[in-house]
Image (cartoon, rainbow over all chains, first blue to last red; front, side, top):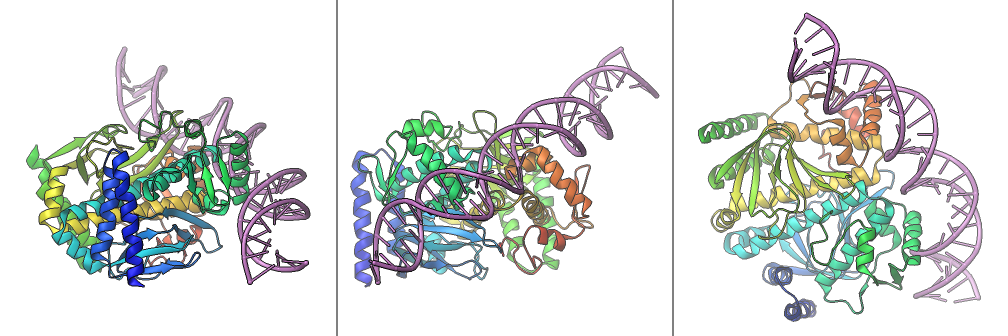
Length: 255
Length: 255
DNA sequence: CGCAACCTTGATCTTAATCAATCGTAGTGG
DNA sequence: CCACTACGATTGATTAAGATCAAGGTTGCG
């Protein structure tokens, strides 16, 4: 069991390391190092079946998690059932670090697909901070990356129309998938999200996401089929999202 | 000039240290250590007039900033002028750390009131990570704290009504102000935000914020006057926000 | 085959946006 | 001291984006 999971880890690292050639810079290095951190500091791996939870709001956890394989989502549920998805987590992403011991988590994490997660207890994080400056910097960056992602979503929900928000969301997920899993084939990525996931991430209903996607599909900007997403014309889609020249610049930029 | 600013810093620390007596635990310690970090690693202080910018989207910055005095807001502006406020920054908050050098910032930070900011260059952050494990942990926590705040706002905008969101927002700001500036007098805090700030933070128009605040005021839940905010009945307001027993639990919890 | 998810589409309703004045108050210059 | 100005808060009338309610329609799987 443990060895099988380490194989998965190693395989992912190789995939990512193999990618360095074609690409320019640091994101790839970062992902590599995140997996190195998982290698060196994880006490065990957790294999989750699709639909099961990694942790839930209210639980106490003194661990940090690194996704090795699969897609998860972080969310919060209100009393009456309204759900807000806060983020998605792909391989190489760090989640669940609340910083303090003994304080309850304020959100839940569930697996969308089958997933493998490296578990790093807080005491190993302390050790990492003491002995491994480069990894500490990686961790800081990962946190900041997550914050910037939340800022993107905030802008999508707060100040973009449904059409703009969905377009922007798909571009971001597409980019993250490529950065995490590796280059896409013909602009196509594996895409396990349901319309309800998209809606709950963007503050929309699944019905409205459906209508919005239909229009984007009719306009030839998006293709979704059996768990795969293709963006035939990312530039045109970026224009819909209210972003221009997104190939050149970091398309997180609003203008 | 430098001495005057250090005096401000010292005074703030004393205020916070003085608070330890009445309260239970780590938040206070954390704030103290954030100011210690500012003391030890800042190369200089910047004094900002109300309404001026600390940095703007698109600029490159290899510094991290710690607010010593005043209120700031972080925001992003879309092409057509729509604005999303991403977060507010109060004394003790850390902002602007993008993690990578030479990459442009993806949001702006402006001062709401006059403000004093400690500037820590990235090379000092590296030094901090290498030599000062406790401070490194503080920095990680501060980042996580910001992420959790963004998650709160995400839930407000995405899944709460205007009334719930405004109630929740005021409770959070009230709490942050107390944690940062010190205990309030008679449930009253200094509150420099305009209705437009609240609207841009919550994805609403200033007009709708006005109407929502009026109703909350008519219900005796909120009092706002000349830059001050009073929450006469936090428990009742928390109920409006869809939170119960918020005195006992971390009211970041949705349920 | 038949059920269970999920997606799709239509009709109607609600929340919040937009448009448009008006009011209050703090500052400014004469 | 007082008109004048500017900016923010307020209120009303109207519109629009997206929610809600209600059927079907697909797809995949035991």
